[in-house]
Length: 85
Image (tube, rainbow, N blue to C red; front, side):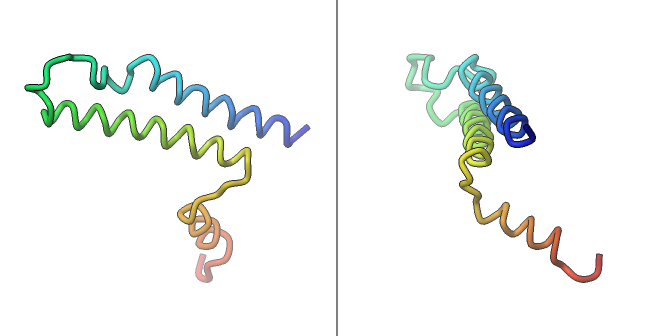
């Protein structure tokens, strides 16, 4: 059914984002063992990428469970209801 295919698509996207996070595509956060590089700009970049992967996973899971964020509600309002399009 349409709902099942939509859920499958969103769960697949969630799993892919979590896999990217788990594979370390977001970097090896905290594995260096050397505290001298804490605050290094590459660490900040790695954390940003890791956070983005988790954010994507949460968003996709939220689309299945019905939890929609304020940003998505505003996107829908402006896309569907704004005059002048």
